[in-house]
Image (tube, rainbow, N blue to C red):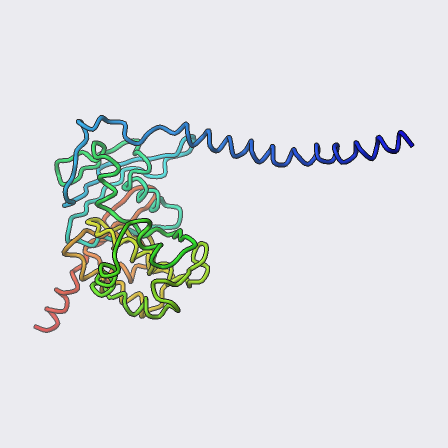
Length: 291
């Protein structure tokens, strides 16, 4: 009886001791991730006195840029690209050719291995602070991350804005019809990663988020791939109307989309770019047809 009583009192303790290894392993993995995050170097490697502050964006010039991830072959080799305010420049290439990586370099998430990036013809891109640079640009990525909240929360991302400003924004860019199509308008709960929205609605919401920043350089990475023809045409017409106030870099696999609204198209092949064609502006085509 003593042995049985002792065993019955020890077995729960032994079982709890075995089960405690699960949270210990979870804590170890979380600690390793936290240690990796805390060990990252700061983006601001230059002193504030040496950093260049940009008030506005006029042009971006990339010359002989190369990039590779650690321990891998070069993804980008001899990239040359020029983009000015008032232009819509297209970038096309096969899957895995490095288009999204080039965007992340432009956003200052990665530093190029070689090459020169110049802003406004005379400012070194490397000497511009990430905060200052990212206030001038906005990106609609290929993989859109949405938060479990309302449509308005995903547009503002914590920024304070009154209702009057939001209404003016939707009216100015023509998003009123999209907002009114949602069950509760701007107060619609979209769910984690936008589970309550279609693919085209997610992309349209991401475009609203980008334009709300009033960027001077807008980068689109397959921004209309999931949209229907009517919505896609609305977005292309909107981009054409915005070209005078900003520079737009549009990335797409669809040549017909790029041909209809781009001034120039660069093709990314084997890690390097080449200007494939010069596109006549749409307004010039319309004028010639009228003549």
